[in-house]
Amino acid sequence: MYSVPLFPTRFKDGDADPGSKPIVCYRYSGPSGGSFSTPTFAPDGGRVAWAEGDGIKVATVPSFAGGCTTDGASQTAAMLIPGGKQPDWGPAGVPTGGGASGGLAAKAAKAKLAKALAKGLSVRVSVPSAGRVSAAATRSGRKVAAGAKSVKVGGATVKLRFTGAARRSLKSARSVKLRIKVAFKPKGGATQRTTVAVTLKR
Image (tube, rainbow, N blue to C red; front, side, top):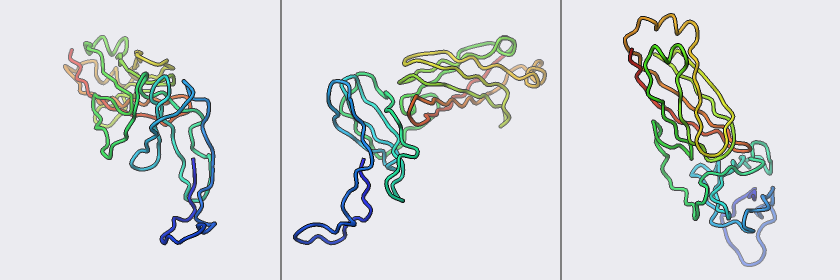
């Protein structure tokens, strides 16, 4: 990763102004398969993805506005797409709401309201690497259930437990609409988020 303190606005013969020369800040090493390929930056410059022998990985890049720094940088890159090749970060954001968000996908399991209140609501997630998933369900903006779990790459189920106040207030409800916010924190990577909606009926 390089920092460019001053981008040159005029090009002349000979060496560039020392103040505009790139500075090596830090580097990643030891790629699977022996080499990195096709690096691509997010539109905002905050993350970079590349391909290795075992798939596409992603890392958070700190702002170099004040010079070289590793503050906020991923210590190790997180696996984004196992077996993937030739990443190309497009200019558009990926929409949330039941789909994947940077490799994270989530779906609430079908359940009856009474059973969910008593035993919890299961949310099935798919993650690109090992890390920790946390989820919180809200109703009209108020949190009613939450859960968290350490996960490995692939699929996992997170159980959301309802609060005592929520169980009491919803015990007579015929149905309830919930908005579930899911966050995935990979080991050494940026947090990924997605949101799903679910309606529970008695």
